[in-house]
Amino acid sequence: MQLKRVVVTGLGALTPIGNNIQEYWDGLVNGKSGAAPITYYDTEKHKTKFACEVKNFNIEEFIDRKEARRMDKFAQYAIVAGEQAIADAGITDTNINKQRVGVIWGAGIGGLETFQEEVLSYAKGDGTPRFNPFFIPKMIADIAPAHISMRNGFMGPNYTTVSACASSANAMIDAFNYIRLGMCDVIVSGGSEAAVTIAGMGGFNSMQALSTRNESPETASRPFDANRDGFVLGEGAGALVFEEYEHAKARGAKIYCEVGGGGMSSDAYHLTAPHPDGIGVIAVMENTLRDAGMKPEDVDHINTHGTSTPLGDVAELKAISHVFGAHAKNININSTKSMTGHLLGAAGAIEAIASILAMKYGIVPPTINHTTVDENIDPSLNLTLNKAQKRDIKVAMSNTFGFGGHNACVLFKKID
View 1 (cartoon, rainbow, N blue to C red):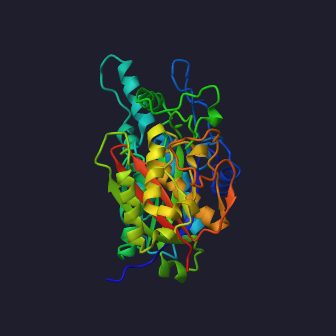
View 2: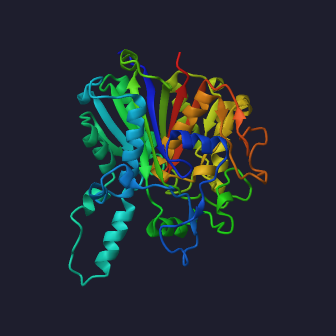
View 3: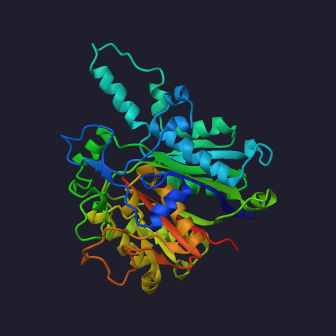
């Protein structure tokens, strides 16, 4: 069977450093930090008092107030990013067959704020189970792509992948496979998350996963730095329109890049910690290269998972050195989480977008907040520290890993 080529024709982003693609890209190349004190609730008794919140966002500019009240924020974010990507791709009622257009989305947690509010409200009552009739439809992780589908009449595959922080990368790989197997013409893919809540922050704090650099939030996310002390929680959404190449050409769509391949693996090691030797990460990058029919020396840029955790950063860079050998020092490696924080299930999507834009503009965004060399990290690696670097990128990889040992990697290449 001849596999079909898949391209990216639309992008949308709602992030802690920008509420659309241009703002997001400007924030990335200028090394903007999205971390700041939390505004959503009183943090007085919390260990970590900051996060990367979406800023200057009013859902009523996009969705009717009554409709918005029936959605958790993670679904609201999905709709906004999804509609941006659909508009960017130039999709209309007349240039697609809606039965061959799907939405495959990623969310690691889903409607956490809704769940928190409903349970706390119940706990304050007399024990009578009074719940909002929209409690379940607001909370469940699959509802975000459902909203995108219903708003646009897309009748193809519609579901959510849930693999913790690898969720939206898994969604993109599924979208890629559906299209190259000839089962769809277009799929809106990506991910969204809105876990900056009392429960979300408290839960991650109890695991000692979050940075507690409360005196300097903007410098707290510091991947690869010797003084990193955990990740910074972020929120938002990223959306990409994946499309069959001939279909895109036939309707005159602009094309950002081609999707070269995707890989998955499992650490099979620990609930939350990465394998110290990066065995699963090695496997996922090798699987991706094999799927794309490429050699290690073909890769110019890697947007790492790079969460700013003591164990994870070292394990990932060890894996890169193993897979790419002597070529590793020639690759521009970065972590855009230094600016956006960690968007959990949406991380893969916004980082894939960052990789695609780096390829489009020939600029690799920096890994900010690096001040102290970690002796456990190979000094020959180019981690694109503190300042963006110009680079002609023909092939870019985006790594995403999740609690439970889920690993996913997507490779993008300049269109021939």
